Amino acid sequence: MSHLFFIKSFDNTVFSETESGHLIRVLRKQVGDRIEVTDGKGHYAQGIITEAHPKKCAFSIESMETHSSPFPYTIHLAIAPPKSSDRLEWMLEKLMEIGITEITFLITEHSERKNINIDKLQSICIAAIKQSKQFFLPILHPPTSWNDFVKNRKETQRYIAYLSPEPLPHLATLAQPKGSILLCIGPEGDFSSIEIKDAMEQQWTPVSLGPSILRTETAGFFAVNVIHLTHVWQSSK
Amino acid sequence: MSHLFFIKSFDNTVFSETESGHLIRVLRKQVGDRIEVTDGKGHYAQGIITEAHPKKCAFSIESMETHSSPFPYTIHLAIAPPKSSDRLEWMLEKLMEIGITEITFLITEHSERKNINIDKLQSICIAAIKQSKQFFLPILHPPTSWNDFVKNRKETQRYIAYLSPEPLPHLATLAQPKGSILLCIGPEGDFSSIEIKDAMEQQWTPVSLGPSILRTETAGFFAVNVIHLTHVWQSSK
Image 1 (tube, rainbow over the protein chains, first blue to last red):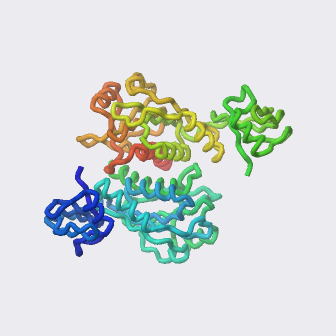
Image 2 (cartoon, helix red, strand yellow):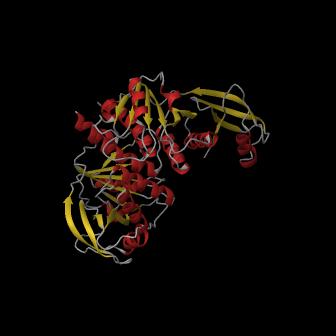
Image 3 (cartoon, rainbow over the protein chains, first blue to last red):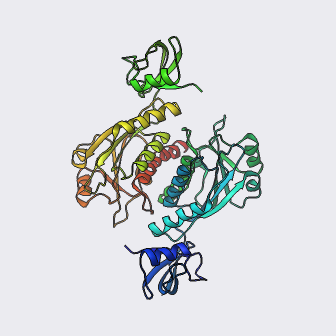
Protein backbone atom coordinates (compact mmCIF):
# COMPACT_ATOMS: atom_id res chain seq x y z
CA MET A 1 0.00 0.00 0.00
CA SER A 2 1.33 3.39 -0.87
CA HIS A 3 1.37 6.12 1.77
CA LEU A 4 -0.05 9.61 1.75
CA PHE A 5 2.00 12.23 3.59
CA PHE A 6 0.88 15.49 5.11
CA ILE A 7 2.30 18.96 4.80
CA LYS A 8 0.81 22.16 6.19
CA SER A 9 1.29 24.11 2.98
CA PHE A 10 2.85 23.44 -0.42
CA ASP A 11 4.50 26.88 -0.19
CA ASN A 12 7.26 25.27 1.87
CA THR A 13 8.02 21.73 0.68
CA VAL A 14 9.80 20.57 3.85
CA PHE A 15 8.00 18.05 6.07
CA SER A 16 7.46 18.51 9.80
CA GLU A 17 9.77 16.70 12.20
CA THR A 18 7.14 13.98 12.87
CA GLU A 19 6.43 13.41 9.20
CA SER A 20 10.16 13.50 8.32
CA GLY A 21 10.87 10.87 10.99
CA HIS A 22 8.15 8.64 9.58
CA LEU A 23 9.45 9.01 6.03
CA ILE A 24 13.14 8.60 6.68
CA ARG A 25 13.56 6.59 9.90
CA VAL A 26 10.50 4.34 9.69
CA LEU A 27 9.91 3.93 5.97
CA ARG A 28 13.59 4.47 5.01
CA LYS A 29 12.76 6.69 2.04
CA GLN A 30 15.71 8.00 0.07
CA VAL A 31 16.51 10.88 -2.28
CA GLY A 32 14.73 10.27 -5.58
CA ASP A 33 11.87 8.20 -4.07
CA ARG A 34 8.38 9.10 -5.27
CA ILE A 35 5.85 10.18 -2.63
CA GLU A 36 2.24 11.33 -2.43
CA VAL A 37 1.41 14.40 -0.35
CA THR A 38 -1.69 16.36 0.70
CA ASP A 39 -2.10 19.65 2.54
CA GLY A 40 -5.58 18.74 3.82
CA LYS A 41 -7.02 21.69 1.86
CA GLY A 42 -8.01 19.67 -1.20
CA HIS A 43 -4.58 19.53 -2.84
CA TYR A 44 -2.84 16.30 -3.75
CA ALA A 45 0.70 16.23 -5.12
CA GLN A 46 3.06 13.62 -6.41
CA GLY A 47 6.60 14.50 -5.51
CA ILE A 48 10.19 13.31 -5.27
CA ILE A 49 12.34 13.42 -2.17
CA THR A 50 15.21 15.87 -2.61
CA GLU A 51 16.68 15.75 0.89
CA ALA A 52 16.31 12.63 3.05
CA HIS A 53 16.82 14.45 6.36
CA PRO A 54 15.16 12.62 9.32
CA LYS A 55 13.98 15.91 10.85
CA LYS A 56 13.40 18.14 7.81
CA CYS A 57 12.87 15.93 4.79
CA ALA A 58 12.38 18.03 1.62
CA PHE A 59 10.70 17.16 -1.68
CA SER A 60 9.95 18.69 -5.07
CA ILE A 61 6.48 18.72 -6.61
CA GLU A 62 6.10 16.79 -9.86
CA SER A 63 2.35 17.16 -10.35
CA MET A 64 -0.54 18.63 -8.42
CA GLU A 65 -4.30 17.99 -8.39
CA THR A 66 -6.94 20.17 -6.73
CA HIS A 67 -9.98 18.33 -5.40
CA SER A 68 -13.26 19.90 -4.44
CA SER A 69 -15.13 18.98 -1.27
CA PRO A 70 -17.29 15.84 -1.61
CA PHE A 71 -20.25 17.71 -0.04
CA PRO A 72 -22.13 20.76 -1.39
CA TYR A 73 -22.27 22.25 2.13
CA THR A 74 -20.04 22.79 5.14
CA ILE A 75 -20.72 21.45 8.64
CA HIS A 76 -19.38 23.20 11.71
CA LEU A 77 -19.91 21.14 14.87
CA ALA A 78 -19.67 23.19 18.07
CA ILE A 79 -19.71 20.82 21.01
CA ALA A 80 -18.95 20.80 24.71
CA PRO A 81 -16.32 18.02 24.84
CA PRO A 82 -17.16 14.89 26.85
CA LYS A 83 -15.20 14.39 30.09
CA SER A 84 -13.50 11.23 28.85
CA SER A 85 -10.61 11.64 26.40
CA ASP A 86 -11.44 8.24 24.90
CA ARG A 87 -14.94 9.37 24.04
CA LEU A 88 -13.67 12.63 22.61
CA GLU A 89 -11.09 10.86 20.45
CA TRP A 90 -13.66 8.29 19.38
CA MET A 91 -16.00 11.05 18.25
CA LEU A 92 -13.26 12.73 16.28
CA GLU A 93 -12.31 9.48 14.55
CA LYS A 94 -15.93 8.83 13.57
CA LEU A 95 -16.44 12.40 12.36
CA MET A 96 -13.33 12.03 10.19
CA GLU A 97 -14.78 8.87 8.67
CA ILE A 98 -18.14 10.43 7.90
CA GLY A 99 -16.96 13.90 6.88
CA ILE A 100 -16.84 17.18 8.83
CA THR A 101 -15.60 20.69 7.95
CA GLU A 102 -14.95 22.43 11.24
CA ILE A 103 -15.10 21.64 14.97
CA THR A 104 -15.19 24.04 17.92
CA PHE A 105 -14.92 22.79 21.50
CA LEU A 106 -17.24 24.88 23.63
CA ILE A 107 -16.79 25.88 27.26
CA THR A 108 -20.30 26.27 28.61
CA GLU A 109 -21.74 26.84 32.06
CA HIS A 110 -22.20 23.09 32.66
CA SER A 111 -19.04 21.92 30.86
CA GLU A 112 -17.23 19.18 32.72
CA ARG A 113 -14.09 19.63 30.71
CA LYS A 114 -12.33 22.85 29.82
CA ASN A 115 -8.92 21.70 28.65
CA ILE A 116 -8.33 19.99 25.36
CA ASN A 117 -5.04 18.79 23.93
CA ILE A 118 -5.66 20.26 20.47
CA ASP A 119 -2.25 19.09 19.18
CA LYS A 120 -3.09 15.47 19.99
CA LEU A 121 -6.52 15.76 18.38
CA GLN A 122 -4.93 17.40 15.35
CA SER A 123 -2.54 14.43 15.06
CA ILE A 124 -5.50 12.04 15.16
CA CYS A 125 -7.13 13.96 12.31
CA ILE A 126 -3.95 13.98 10.23
CA ALA A 127 -3.45 10.24 10.80
CA ALA A 128 -7.06 9.64 9.74
CA ILE A 129 -6.84 11.55 6.45
CA LYS A 130 -3.53 9.85 5.69
CA GLN A 131 -5.00 6.42 6.32
CA SER A 132 -8.21 6.94 4.39
CA LYS A 133 -6.52 9.01 1.66
CA GLN A 134 -8.72 12.02 2.05
CA PHE A 135 -7.55 15.47 0.96
CA PHE A 136 -9.53 17.57 3.43
CA LEU A 137 -8.50 18.14 7.04
CA PRO A 138 -11.18 19.64 9.27
CA ILE A 139 -10.42 22.87 11.10
CA LEU A 140 -10.10 22.26 14.87
CA HIS A 141 -10.59 25.34 16.97
CA PRO A 142 -9.18 25.62 20.51
CA PRO A 143 -11.68 25.60 23.41
CA THR A 144 -13.89 28.67 23.09
CA SER A 145 -16.14 30.18 25.72
CA TRP A 146 -19.86 30.20 24.98
CA ASN A 147 -20.08 33.99 25.21
CA ASP A 148 -17.35 34.46 22.61
CA PHE A 149 -18.83 31.83 20.33
CA VAL A 150 -22.51 32.65 20.27
CA LYS A 151 -22.29 36.17 18.88
CA ASN A 152 -22.50 37.08 15.19
CA ARG A 153 -22.04 33.61 13.73
CA LYS A 154 -21.62 33.65 9.97
CA GLU A 155 -23.23 30.25 9.25
CA THR A 156 -26.44 30.44 7.20
CA GLN A 157 -28.16 27.66 9.23
CA ARG A 158 -27.58 27.56 12.99
CA TYR A 159 -29.08 24.72 15.05
CA ILE A 160 -28.88 24.18 18.77
CA ALA A 161 -29.94 20.79 20.18
CA TYR A 162 -31.08 20.55 23.78
CA LEU A 163 -33.60 18.78 26.01
CA SER A 164 -36.66 20.96 26.07
CA PRO A 165 -39.84 20.52 28.16
CA GLU A 166 -41.89 21.44 25.03
CA PRO A 167 -41.32 19.16 22.05
CA LEU A 168 -38.88 20.60 19.49
CA PRO A 169 -38.80 19.76 15.77
CA HIS A 170 -36.24 17.10 14.84
CA LEU A 171 -33.09 18.43 13.17
CA ALA A 172 -33.85 16.04 10.30
CA THR A 173 -37.08 17.86 9.48
CA LEU A 174 -35.46 21.32 9.25
CA ALA A 175 -31.87 21.05 8.03
CA GLN A 176 -31.15 21.80 4.38
CA PRO A 177 -27.97 20.26 2.93
CA LYS A 178 -26.60 23.47 1.44
CA GLY A 179 -24.61 26.53 2.46
CA SER A 180 -22.93 26.60 5.85
CA ILE A 181 -24.47 24.67 8.73
CA LEU A 182 -23.72 25.10 12.42
CA LEU A 183 -24.67 22.24 14.77
CA CYS A 184 -24.39 23.07 18.43
CA ILE A 185 -24.40 20.31 21.10
CA GLY A 186 -24.21 20.91 24.83
CA PRO A 187 -22.49 19.04 27.67
CA GLU A 188 -23.98 16.10 29.64
CA GLY A 189 -25.73 18.62 31.91
CA ASP A 190 -27.11 20.41 28.81
CA PHE A 191 -27.01 24.11 28.03
CA SER A 192 -28.12 26.47 30.78
CA SER A 193 -31.33 28.42 30.33
CA ILE A 194 -29.28 31.60 29.84
CA GLU A 195 -27.25 29.95 27.07
CA ILE A 196 -30.44 28.80 25.34
CA LYS A 197 -31.78 32.35 25.62
CA ASP A 198 -28.51 33.68 24.08
CA ALA A 199 -28.95 31.34 21.11
CA MET A 200 -32.57 32.36 20.62
CA GLU A 201 -31.55 36.03 20.64
CA GLN A 202 -29.11 35.23 17.83
CA GLN A 203 -31.90 33.58 15.81
CA TRP A 204 -30.52 30.07 16.16
CA THR A 205 -33.03 27.27 15.57
CA PRO A 206 -33.78 24.94 18.52
CA VAL A 207 -33.98 21.26 17.52
CA SER A 208 -34.37 17.79 18.97
CA LEU A 209 -32.26 14.75 18.04
CA GLY A 210 -35.05 12.26 18.71
CA PRO A 211 -36.66 10.43 21.61
CA SER A 212 -33.51 8.90 23.15
CA ILE A 213 -31.24 10.86 25.46
CA LEU A 214 -27.85 10.59 23.75
CA ARG A 215 -24.42 11.01 25.27
CA THR A 216 -22.68 14.18 24.08
CA GLU A 217 -20.33 12.42 21.67
CA THR A 218 -23.13 10.27 20.24
CA ALA A 219 -25.27 13.37 19.73
CA GLY A 220 -22.41 15.10 17.87
CA PHE A 221 -21.87 12.20 15.51
CA PHE A 222 -25.60 11.61 15.04
CA ALA A 223 -26.30 15.27 14.18
CA VAL A 224 -23.61 15.23 11.48
CA ASN A 225 -25.13 12.00 10.08
CA VAL A 226 -28.47 13.77 9.83
CA ILE A 227 -27.04 16.42 7.49
CA HIS A 228 -25.25 13.92 5.23
CA LEU A 229 -28.36 11.72 5.05
CA THR A 230 -30.63 14.69 4.25
CA HIS A 231 -28.31 15.29 1.32
CA VAL A 232 -28.62 11.65 0.18
CA TRP A 233 -32.41 11.80 0.44
CA GLN A 234 -32.79 15.06 -1.40
CA SER A 235 -30.36 13.99 -4.12
CA SER A 236 -32.30 10.77 -4.71
CA LYS A 237 -35.64 12.51 -5.24
CA MET B 1 -31.64 9.25 41.43
CA SER B 2 -33.68 6.10 41.74
CA HIS B 3 -32.37 2.87 40.25
CA LEU B 4 -33.91 0.48 37.78
CA PHE B 5 -33.11 -3.21 38.35
CA PHE B 6 -33.12 -6.04 35.85
CA ILE B 7 -34.69 -9.45 36.05
CA LYS B 8 -34.82 -12.07 33.29
CA SER B 9 -38.50 -12.80 33.79
CA PHE B 10 -41.21 -11.71 36.22
CA ASP B 11 -42.24 -15.38 36.50
CA ASN B 12 -39.48 -15.80 39.11
CA THR B 13 -39.09 -12.70 41.29
CA VAL B 14 -35.60 -13.49 42.57
CA PHE B 15 -32.71 -11.37 41.28
CA SER B 16 -29.53 -12.83 39.77
CA GLU B 17 -26.43 -13.03 41.96
CA THR B 18 -24.94 -9.90 40.34
CA GLU B 19 -28.11 -7.88 40.71
CA SER B 20 -28.64 -9.14 44.28
CA GLY B 21 -25.10 -8.10 45.20
CA HIS B 22 -25.71 -4.64 43.79
CA LEU B 23 -29.00 -4.27 45.66
CA ILE B 24 -27.94 -5.61 49.03
CA ARG B 25 -24.18 -5.18 49.37
CA VAL B 26 -23.69 -1.95 47.38
CA LEU B 27 -26.99 -0.11 47.82
CA ARG B 28 -27.79 -1.70 51.20
CA LYS B 29 -31.46 -2.24 50.40
CA GLN B 30 -33.54 -3.89 53.10
CA VAL B 31 -36.76 -5.86 53.39
CA GLY B 32 -39.69 -3.50 52.72
CA ASP B 33 -37.70 -1.11 50.46
CA ARG B 34 -39.43 -0.07 47.25
CA ILE B 35 -37.66 -0.88 43.97
CA GLU B 36 -38.22 -0.47 40.22
CA VAL B 37 -37.63 -3.47 37.96
CA THR B 38 -37.71 -4.25 34.23
CA ASP B 39 -37.38 -7.51 32.31
CA GLY B 40 -36.11 -5.79 29.14
CA LYS B 41 -39.19 -7.04 27.30
CA GLY B 42 -41.27 -3.88 27.76
CA HIS B 43 -42.43 -4.60 31.34
CA TYR B 44 -41.81 -2.23 34.22
CA ALA B 45 -42.77 -3.13 37.78
CA GLN B 46 -42.72 -1.41 41.12
CA GLY B 47 -41.97 -3.88 43.86
CA ILE B 48 -40.97 -4.37 47.46
CA ILE B 49 -38.01 -6.39 48.70
CA THR B 50 -39.18 -9.49 50.58
CA GLU B 51 -35.82 -11.15 51.17
CA ALA B 52 -32.63 -9.09 51.39
CA HIS B 53 -30.30 -11.95 50.48
CA PRO B 54 -26.99 -10.73 48.91
CA LYS B 55 -26.99 -13.58 46.38
CA LYS B 56 -30.71 -14.21 45.81
CA CYS B 57 -32.64 -11.10 46.73
CA ALA B 58 -36.40 -11.60 46.30
CA PHE B 59 -39.19 -9.08 45.82
CA SER B 60 -42.96 -8.93 45.40
CA ILE B 61 -44.65 -7.05 42.55
CA GLU B 62 -46.89 -4.16 43.62
CA SER B 63 -47.78 -2.79 40.19
CA MET B 64 -46.83 -3.54 36.61
CA GLU B 65 -46.85 -1.50 33.38
CA THR B 66 -46.42 -2.86 29.87
CA HIS B 67 -44.71 -0.52 27.39
CA SER B 68 -44.73 -0.87 23.64
CA SER B 69 -41.61 -0.42 21.52
CA PRO B 70 -40.83 3.23 20.70
CA PHE B 71 -40.40 2.29 17.02
CA PRO B 72 -42.99 0.92 14.57
CA TYR B 73 -40.40 -1.51 13.12
CA THR B 74 -37.68 -3.88 14.29
CA ILE B 75 -34.01 -3.65 13.33
CA HIS B 76 -31.79 -6.72 13.26
CA LEU B 77 -28.12 -5.80 12.76
CA ALA B 78 -26.00 -8.72 11.54
CA ILE B 79 -22.37 -7.68 11.63
CA ALA B 80 -18.92 -9.22 11.49
CA PRO B 81 -17.48 -7.96 14.80
CA PRO B 82 -14.46 -5.63 14.64
CA LYS B 83 -11.15 -7.07 15.86
CA SER B 84 -10.88 -4.65 18.76
CA SER B 85 -13.05 -5.34 21.81
CA ASP B 86 -13.12 -1.61 22.56
CA ARG B 87 -14.61 -0.88 19.17
CA LEU B 88 -17.14 -3.67 19.56
CA GLU B 89 -18.21 -2.47 23.00
CA TRP B 90 -18.35 1.11 21.77
CA MET B 91 -20.68 0.06 18.95
CA LEU B 92 -22.93 -1.80 21.35
CA GLU B 93 -23.14 1.17 23.70
CA LYS B 94 -24.04 3.51 20.84
CA LEU B 95 -26.64 1.09 19.44
CA MET B 96 -28.21 0.89 22.88
CA GLU B 97 -28.45 4.68 23.00
CA ILE B 98 -30.06 4.98 19.59
CA GLY B 99 -32.28 1.88 19.71
CA ILE B 100 -31.81 -1.63 18.26
CA THR B 101 -33.92 -4.80 18.41
CA GLU B 102 -31.55 -7.67 17.66
CA ILE B 103 -27.84 -8.19 16.94
CA THR B 104 -26.12 -11.19 15.37
CA PHE B 105 -22.32 -11.45 15.22
CA LEU B 106 -21.39 -13.02 11.90
CA ILE B 107 -18.45 -15.26 11.15
CA THR B 108 -17.64 -14.63 7.52
CA GLU B 109 -14.82 -15.71 5.22
CA HIS B 110 -12.82 -12.54 5.94
CA SER B 111 -13.77 -12.22 9.62
CA GLU B 112 -10.82 -11.22 11.79
CA ARG B 113 -12.60 -12.19 14.96
CA LYS B 114 -14.54 -15.34 15.69
CA ASN B 115 -14.88 -15.33 19.45
CA ILE B 116 -17.16 -13.00 21.31
CA ASN B 117 -17.72 -12.82 25.04
CA ILE B 118 -21.51 -12.66 24.78
CA ASP B 119 -21.94 -12.61 28.57
CA LYS B 120 -19.83 -9.46 28.85
CA LEU B 121 -21.70 -7.78 25.98
CA GLN B 122 -24.98 -8.80 27.57
CA SER B 123 -23.89 -7.13 30.82
CA ILE B 124 -23.06 -3.94 28.92
CA CYS B 125 -26.56 -3.96 27.42
CA ILE B 126 -28.22 -4.54 30.80
CA ALA B 127 -26.16 -1.76 32.39
CA ALA B 128 -27.18 0.56 29.54
CA ILE B 129 -30.92 -0.05 29.84
CA LYS B 130 -30.69 0.32 33.62
CA GLN B 131 -28.83 3.62 33.29
CA SER B 132 -31.07 5.12 30.63
CA LYS B 133 -34.25 3.61 32.11
CA GLN B 134 -35.28 1.79 28.98
CA PHE B 135 -37.58 -1.23 29.12
CA PHE B 136 -36.32 -3.07 26.03
CA LEU B 137 -33.17 -5.19 25.97
CA PRO B 138 -31.93 -6.14 22.49
CA ILE B 139 -31.49 -9.82 21.68
CA LEU B 140 -27.78 -10.69 21.32
CA HIS B 141 -27.12 -13.84 19.34
CA PRO B 142 -23.89 -15.83 19.71
CA PRO B 143 -21.43 -15.79 16.79
CA THR B 144 -23.13 -17.42 13.80
CA SER B 145 -21.50 -18.68 10.62
CA TRP B 146 -22.49 -16.96 7.41
CA ASN B 147 -23.82 -20.16 5.87
CA ASP B 148 -26.14 -20.77 8.79
CA PHE B 149 -27.31 -17.18 8.85
CA VAL B 150 -27.97 -16.38 5.22
CA LYS B 151 -30.65 -18.98 4.54
CA ASN B 152 -34.40 -18.44 4.89
CA ARG B 153 -34.31 -15.18 6.82
CA LYS B 154 -37.73 -14.12 8.03
CA GLU B 155 -37.16 -10.33 7.91
CA THR B 156 -39.36 -8.52 5.37
CA GLN B 157 -36.55 -6.15 4.30
CA ARG B 158 -33.02 -7.56 4.00
CA TYR B 159 -30.12 -5.22 3.13
CA ILE B 160 -26.48 -6.11 2.65
CA ALA B 161 -23.93 -3.27 2.50
CA TYR B 162 -20.64 -3.82 0.72
CA LEU B 163 -18.10 -2.05 -1.47
CA SER B 164 -19.16 -2.70 -5.03
CA PRO B 165 -17.33 -1.75 -8.24
CA GLU B 166 -20.69 -0.66 -9.72
CA PRO B 167 -22.48 2.07 -7.75
CA LEU B 168 -25.20 0.72 -5.43
CA PRO B 169 -28.25 2.65 -4.22
CA HIS B 170 -27.83 4.21 -0.77
CA LEU B 171 -29.64 2.37 2.04
CA ALA B 172 -31.37 5.69 2.82
CA THR B 173 -33.09 5.71 -0.58
CA LEU B 174 -34.56 2.20 -0.22
CA ALA B 175 -35.28 1.38 3.43
CA GLN B 176 -38.86 1.69 4.67
CA PRO B 177 -39.32 2.22 8.42
CA LYS B 178 -41.85 -0.57 8.93
CA GLY B 179 -42.00 -4.31 9.47
CA SER B 180 -38.78 -6.21 10.19
CA ILE B 181 -35.52 -4.90 8.80
CA LEU B 182 -32.25 -6.82 8.50
CA LEU B 183 -29.04 -4.80 8.06
CA CYS B 184 -26.00 -6.86 7.20
CA ILE B 185 -22.46 -5.39 7.50
CA GLY B 186 -19.27 -7.25 6.61
CA PRO B 187 -15.80 -7.29 8.18
CA GLU B 188 -12.94 -4.87 7.37
CA GLY B 189 -12.00 -7.07 4.40
CA ASP B 190 -15.66 -6.99 3.24
CA PHE B 191 -17.85 -9.92 2.25
CA SER B 192 -16.36 -12.42 -0.19
CA SER B 193 -17.81 -12.64 -3.70
CA ILE B 194 -19.37 -16.00 -2.78
CA GLU B 195 -21.08 -14.48 0.26
CA ILE B 196 -22.46 -11.63 -1.84
CA LYS B 197 -23.73 -14.22 -4.35
CA ASP B 198 -25.40 -16.13 -1.47
CA ALA B 199 -27.21 -12.96 -0.38
CA MET B 200 -28.36 -12.21 -3.94
CA GLU B 201 -29.73 -15.76 -4.26
CA GLN B 202 -31.78 -15.10 -1.12
CA GLN B 203 -33.18 -11.89 -2.65
CA TRP B 204 -31.36 -9.58 -0.27
CA THR B 205 -30.98 -5.99 -1.46
CA PRO B 206 -27.42 -4.70 -2.02
CA VAL B 207 -26.87 -1.16 -0.73
CA SER B 208 -24.19 1.46 -0.25
CA LEU B 209 -23.66 3.51 2.92
CA GLY B 210 -22.26 6.54 1.08
CA PRO B 211 -19.01 7.74 -0.45
CA SER B 212 -16.74 7.27 2.60
CA ILE B 213 -15.23 3.91 3.49
CA LEU B 214 -16.41 3.36 7.06
CA ARG B 215 -14.93 1.10 9.70
CA THR B 216 -17.14 -1.88 10.49
CA GLU B 217 -18.46 -0.51 13.76
CA THR B 218 -19.11 2.93 12.26
CA ALA B 219 -21.00 1.32 9.38
CA GLY B 220 -23.17 -0.67 11.82
CA PHE B 221 -24.11 2.37 13.84
CA PHE B 222 -24.60 4.53 10.75
CA ALA B 223 -26.91 1.98 9.06
CA VAL B 224 -29.15 1.86 12.16
CA ASN B 225 -29.24 5.68 12.19
CA VAL B 226 -30.45 5.60 8.59
CA ILE B 227 -33.54 3.57 9.54
CA HIS B 228 -34.45 5.74 12.53
CA LEU B 229 -33.98 8.92 10.48
CA THR B 230 -36.08 7.59 7.59
CA HIS B 231 -38.81 7.13 10.17
CA VAL B 232 -38.41 10.74 11.38
CA TRP B 233 -38.52 12.03 7.81
CA GLN B 234 -41.55 10.05 6.77
CA SER B 235 -43.42 10.91 9.99
CA SER B 236 -42.82 14.64 9.44
CA LYS B 237 -44.27 14.70 5.93
